[in-house]
Length: 392
Image (tube, rainbow, N blue to C red; front, side, top):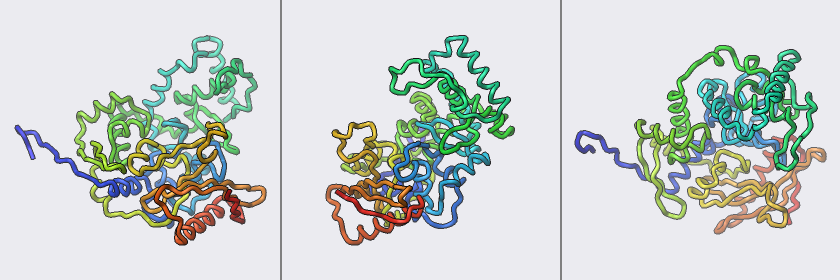
């Protein structure tokens, strides 16, 4: 419809169940995680994959990829990094991104360089000279890990206290002077960016405006339906004002989305949103990583699914409601519970410690069978021989 020559788009309305199914389709969890694996495509579809060092069963990045295709195995991501199919940088956290995205990520280096408050040592000329010396060592010796340097922590009062060489390496990594060459036992090896990023990718120049447009559209595409705040939060590479300015000139389709509690939220939809309605989520039960894209935005998760979830690794043991590292359980388009499970690779055992069901979820024989099947698949994924129940 139109008014005074201006087209007014009538908002589409999506029920809560449609919204849940659309989100699971958009983040790659609607279809069964089977078939031929195209790892590069999986990462491109997700936009990025968060890296995390904690290995209770498998590290988060490996678990996230396995959840999309259970033919995935852990060495595959390292091989893709070494072959320059992906690069590492910081979204809302340390992540891997497709190498093709690098030219659209250049603004993030500049944003990191401007946020030097946490790198106050840079105001000291000797530390700047220290960075030059570090880069020269890398140029002379090749990729180096933080273990190749021996400066000591000066101020231990901060929770994340680090030695000066580690701060310098991280700073140069954040601003794009260094890049991750490879990892050994998850330890990062830094190299000069020009030795890691292909020359044609490094030379590509894209305007800041075009980068913002690409990032915003890419976020909306991967979210399916999103508020402007969710678009900003997706990459953490644009300010709220930059997203608002983009939206004011973009041709966006307004929608209304029903939450789990029945309320409605104003949002925007990606152009192909109606075609995504045709895909219904698989009914299999999935054990997801606490850092999975489907649950990463806890506010969105609670609104769409009524699933109040947080990871309690920083909560004192006596105050934890569930456990140190508890996995969300997804069945179809509902989160039905939480599972505490831990791999003992030395003993080749996957230990099931605790299971908590969500309110109004009944533990049926069918669900038990589904969970057993998923635990067996997870055991094969991490290379252990047996699933052992130790539920308290």
